[in-house]
Length: 563
Image 1 (cartoon, helix red, strand yellow):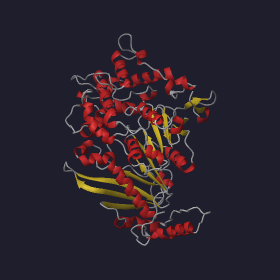
Image 2 (cartoon, rainbow, N blue to C red):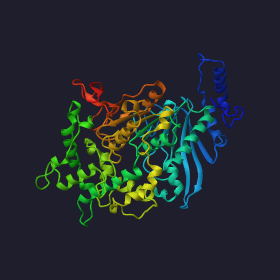
Image 3 (cartoon, helix red, strand yellow):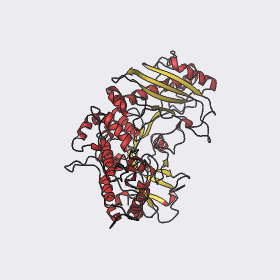
Image 4 (tube, one colour):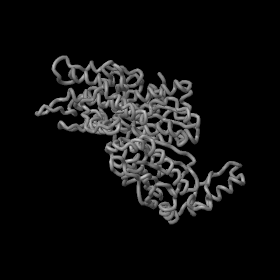
């Protein structure tokens, strides 16, 4: 334990001192069988509230302003819940690091929210963001890839989130060069360091163990930490990582948007209505055909494709022989599906991003929201046409080109305009993780098989490259494991068992040495697909194979197998 000048209360509030001195005395005297004993200070509500208030003026962070709010025990539940356990007493710290005026004349700062529980368990959890960031994730909740984790704050974790250096979900911040750097990595570095200093001030010691959990952009952030700042976290969950977002995945988003828009029916004014390129009945038809081709390869036909390597599907089997009617697809629809699932390429046939795996999750609402949207008018509302297009023209292009018409994206020339920022932002290139592995770090990759924006194939490609550079799959699983979620859309949703506790999997791996061969997953009782279904998520290359007997709704009827 390092304590900077124990007599200087800028580093340790007075309420910490008794427990802190006890820890030091026990360590010096060989207490606890000669092992160093670290105890967390225990605060009464009055002392805890006072320490929360004191943090504003006495924590001593440079170029940082703080506001605090003390939440008494039994007065708030996680998020917006109105039932269930209350949160413990905790201090919510909102910080603003390096406030400045950007090159675009707008105000910027690195914002963060840190929740510090009175009954701290010695653990620190960083919640990754997503989209274009610009908001503070509620630190009373878990990350978006681990909805099955009970509130980490409620468990005693100190929890932080950041807006990644700008306010608002638009990518217009890309006009400011420093905001781009902040979004890529600097805001995360500053947030992690500030959080650990405040934890040290509050409790008199740095965290015993530090964890990161995020999905999408948050998954990219986790990978970024493992590469740029390998000593910051003991374990990282990188869900559906946007590792190639400012190059390949955004190229694919434009490809998909253009392909589907080109076959969409027109309104009376001749304008395309993107959402109507495929009806829900059409997508259900595709999902059913994928199941017919691939579902039983895992030992049972249960509506989920677990044995992904045995899945081969061609949508041509659904093509109408004449005019479109009933259970078939038009030739234009089949052609668009083939193009999207094969992935984008330039005029020379060079692949620009991984294609999509065939999976029945195409019928999920999350798949539609990204690819097609729901707008019944010619103004589309798909995430590809809005979120990804916004990021492309404002941040991923160098220089930004806000007036660019994304339907005119040139797959021969426009990817080159994304290369400069990709070198700063993307995380797919480091496929060794040498420093992170050397310091003993662990990393979990988790990806839904029907993720419509970041292909599970891209994550598998990265993981296989990582294994090739680290002595093979068995050796790589000592520090990195990958889990695929059949049916799951982007980070959650779809016909899937998408509720699981990846945070506990990290804790068990780091603190107990129990590497996750599988993660228990379930579908919620409210699921319209598989209510209350349980499944093991198996460490790749294994998949959940039916044992041959038992309920298909019960995880005990399945075993993780490679064949």
